[in-house]
Amino acid sequence: MKSLGHHILVEMYGCDPSVLNNIELIETEMKNAAVEANATVVDSSFHMFSPYGVSGVVVIAESHLAIHTWPEYGYAAVDLFTCGDDVDPWIAYRYLEKIFKAQYASTVEMKRGQMDAVVKGKEMRKNEIKELIGEVVQ
Amino acid sequence: MKSLGHHILVEMYGCDPSVLNNIELIETEMKNAAVEANATVVDSSFHMFSPYGVSGVVVIAESHLAIHTWPEYGYAAVDLFTCGDDVDPWIAYRYLEKIFKAQYASTVEMKRGQMDAVVKGKEMRKNEIKELIGEVVQ
Image 1 (spheres, chains in turn green, purple):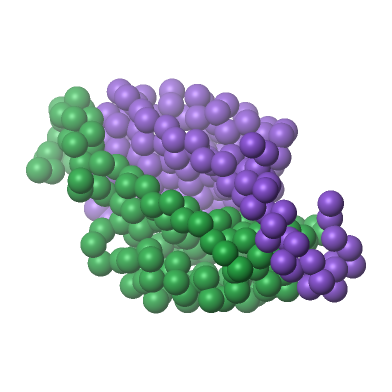
Image 2: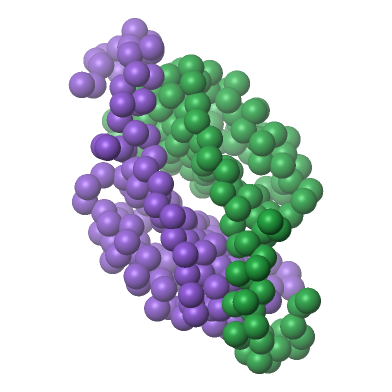
């Protein structure tokens, strides 16, 4: 079924804890993963927490990549959300898996904005959409 | 089953398109939703796309809230990812549902970092974790 976006939710277990606590490396590699997947990086925001752990997001023109790490557990939660047919979030996944040296990982892929539901919602708002943008996209 | 975080993936259909195209309002209300849910806002990054659509992320001390909007479809994809027992992502959900005036919405809640898998991964890395942080968290 066609959808506006693809979102991979990744759990990485048994990662290298020193990588998970290295904010510079994580920010660089999350941006690299976006570029590898053919995404356009718009902005990024990364933060180091006390006593350990990194959170960060790369906003891309095609949605976002996000990460939260728990070095004390060797665990990272990674989100790879991309839109359109030109960007492949699985390329970003395979890239990052190597960086974090996960002993094992699990992934769930969710389709975001399934087109049948999107079209129904658009129909309910078509007059307001036309008023806002001068047309109703088919 | 215990987990480190809770992540609600929200699809909002038939939203008010003028709200979905208002970057200032969306940034303000995404931050308000974080505060309502008892989260601590660390940073935010919001962007307006041409010809329409807004993407943005609020990094919170307890993970992140993210949104991507398609005003031309009346659709928004919202992620509400929180960690710990003090923050309730469902409060953020109920707050935002009213703001975007969705005609209908669907939600999926995912547990992120299930503790049994986290503990197994930690065990595999316990020597490196001890070296990094001087202890192994129980």
